[in-house]
Amino acid sequence: MKILNFGSLNIDNVYQVDHFVRKGETISSKSLTLFSGGKGLNQSVALGSAGAKVWHAGSIGKDGLFLLETLRTAGVNVSCVRVLEEGKTGNAIIQNDAEGDNCILLYGGANQRITREQIDETLSHFSAEDFLVLQNEVNELHYLVQKAHEKGMRIVLNPSPMDEKIFEINLSLVDLFVLNDLEAAELTGGTGTEPATMLALLQRKFPSACFVLTLGPQGAYYADAKQTIWQEIYPAKVVDTTAAGDTFTGYFLAAILEGKSVKASLDLAAKAAAIAVSRPGAAPSIPKLDEVLEMWN
Ligand code: RIB
Image (cartoon, rainbow, N blue to C red; front, side):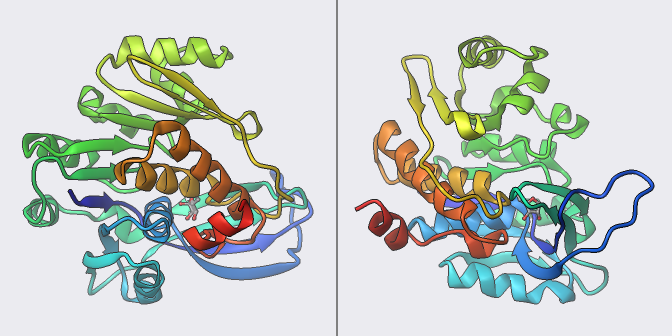
């Protein structure tokens, strides 16, 4: 069983600010740091760091070659990443405030230039029962899901960042959703509801899927037709929340696919995410499995 993550690769420009810039306002930042990022890349790094065998697919420009090194260092196979002759790698402008919260402005760049030919070629290396992991930062998601389903692959969707493109996908083909409360509300039309109600709405809408619902400081829930399991967060000094969700997703998947129980997988993911929030940046904040195990030995 192989894991293919077809997702974004971004250059993150992270500005340290006292507060997020407001409409019409000009502020100075304390620092600017460049990090490897993108929800796709971060999740692949988390999967690889947790010990999973993962192939990353996507597109970058020549300005983003260092992102491949980040992936390789985490043990990720990058043979399915295309380097475009022209055009820019996707990038993000991230404001990181004094509380460690962020706001993100994306430029899709090469992430939005995925072709159907590229998808067909990439999927030809994978087969039934392999896993396809997706987020919402590349184009052609509908085609990707359709083709992967035809091959019998199992589909994991993190519908983040949520926008109308998610509804172009045949969502009934998704096997596992990893999503937060806002994304759950968008998918179900329910707002301001309790976790149990959100999960019930999700299950009614997508009866054959499983769900991981992440709720920030309130922890996370896993639900399928037979069980609902809650996971609390682990305490951490918050420096930068960027990629904490990606760390959780990658670690959870790696653990589940390795055969760990749902509870053990959630627990490991929560520990890894707690380390990620205590460090600056996206990909560089994602811990290796050894660090996670040592920290809570
Ligand atoms: O989830 C965090 C990521 O979102 C950042 O690395 C940024 O690139 C955006 O894609």
